[in-house]
Image 1 (spheres, helix red, strand yellow):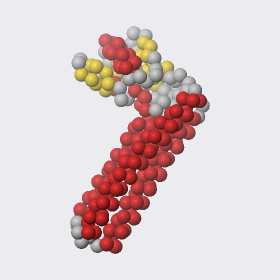
Image 2 (image 1 turned 120 degrees about the vertical axis):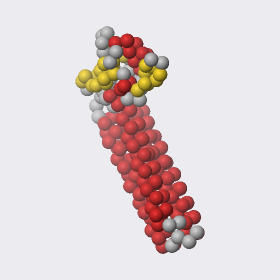
Image 3 (image 1 turned 30 degrees about the vertical axis):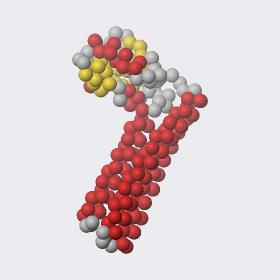
Image 4 (image 1 turned 120 degrees about the horizontal axis):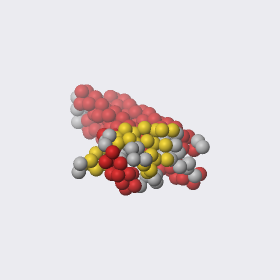
Length: 188
């Protein structure tokens, strides 16, 4: 394995670990904290002329206040399909409409529900860390194979330390993301 191939392996590992953290961040944004956020409905697909379409492409999604999400469809005939999509998504929210806008009121979270959400956030962080460790494992295998095929052993050891440090850094970043989310969830 040449130095360029080794660098490419590390570049791909870096991308994979970045992707794992970005996925964690996106998933954490979907967890309710008792405060209204457009991210809570960002993954919603609404039937639009027969094809599933992201909610943001058929309506303007904003927060009216800290407890209310306002969804204003571009076309009034989309109110029904939007409400139906919200019910089917099982978000635990009941949509209301005034003929022009769909409103979602976020109820305050109970202590038990907050604890469940913290568990869910920690589970998501652990999944991200597993993904990061899996990437590290692939790179370590690549380094060992390269050393066996003639790559300098001392450089191989340096690269192993490098990938372990990268893994540790991404693990700490995942912990930080979940700590921030946990604080947000538990703040009443």
